[in-house]
Each structure stands twice: as structure tokens, then as C-alpha cells.
Length: 150
Image 1 (spheres, helix red, strand yellow):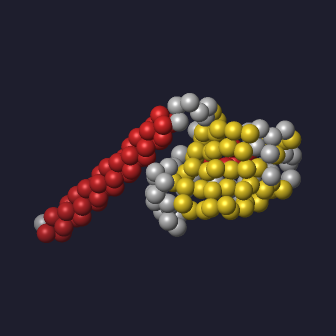
Image 2 (cartoon, one colour; image 1 turned 120 degrees about the horizontal axis):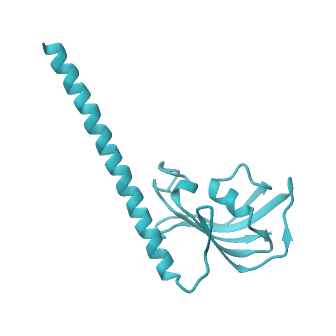
């Protein structure tokens, strides 16, 4: 009897931990969604375009498209949506087009960017670092990049 009681409590503990984890996950996602909505309200006059889940605003347009295998250089400053963490300032990123070594948000963005483009890229958490902490970046963080394509 004690054996079954112990097994029952172990099972119950697993269920409670699982539900608590789902609740915490939902809270993080809801908070980030609300912050993203607030961000776009503050930029109401800016024309952000949704491309497959990321948001792109090109302030200055370039003219030349990248070709497969070409080296792409991006000068950027990256922050979290709430401006809590600046994780990179004036950094230079180099990748080979189409950027298979980048986070999903940049991979999507590169398809729509040209040499000389300058703007802002908003990457919701599911296209960035997701549900895990990466360095100073908290789980569920939407990333905002000011960029210039070279």
C-alpha cells in the first residue's frame, strides 16, 4: 500500500510541476506579446511590414540584391524590446547569403533586404532565442535591431 501511495504522490508531483511550467511559459509569452503590441502603438506612424512573423521597417532603401554565396555585412545595434538589455552596440555581423548560421528572424529578413538598406528589424522571441536565456537576453525576449546592410 505504501508503495502505491508513494507512486501516486510522485505522479501527482509531476503533474503539478508540468502545469506550473506551462503556466509560467504562458505568462512569459503573454507579457512579451503585450510588450510587442505596445511597441507598435508607439510607432503608429512607421510602416513596419510583417514578413513571415518578423517586422521590418526600411528607412533608407538600397538597390542591389544579394546573391547566393555572397558575403553579407550587417552593422547593427541590438536591444530587447523593453530596452532592458543592449546586447550589442555598433557590432558587425558577417554571414554568407542566405544566412543559414543566423537566428530565424535574420534569415527571414535577409530575403527582403538589399545592400545599402537601413532600418529596424523586430524579431519576436519565437524567431530569436525562444524560451531560453542566452547571455543577458531573458527567455521570451523580442529583439529589436537598428541595422545597416553593407
